[in-house]
Image (cartoon, rainbow, N blue to C red; front, side, top):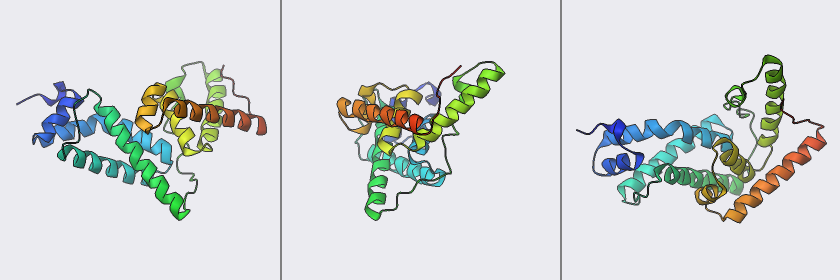
Length: 198
């Protein structure tokens, strides 16, 4: 029997398609944290993120069984695209019902400043305040702008990868980033916030 830890995500997906359920368990373990963090960041509600995470994996299983996955060496990008589509379907449904409301249950606190900055205590305090302000302002951005900022700066994806994952052109991705930056600058002026890291 193969050692599943040694297989790539793509090999695990193909092994699962061929009937190895343990291969899917390994895939889930490898991808769940990154995928859930992405969903939670976009929807800002832990209960809804859990629902959308489960829906995403149901779609992943369904598509794998339908033979709609082709080993292209980009399994993680494939499931991120499915998650993106699930989130956008949910937003469309909410918009149709006029139920989209901001929540206070997730203010990006899952992104630790200490992971980003390793400075002395005084600087850390100042930087934590700056990052708190940035997170609060990012939560006020429209979902598509918040998503591109998260993918670019927190997941370190290129604009080409963002475009592929979100199903838009590179120019649209760049445009969303541009509007996000303009909106963030406007918010800093309106609220007299200084965003300078020491």
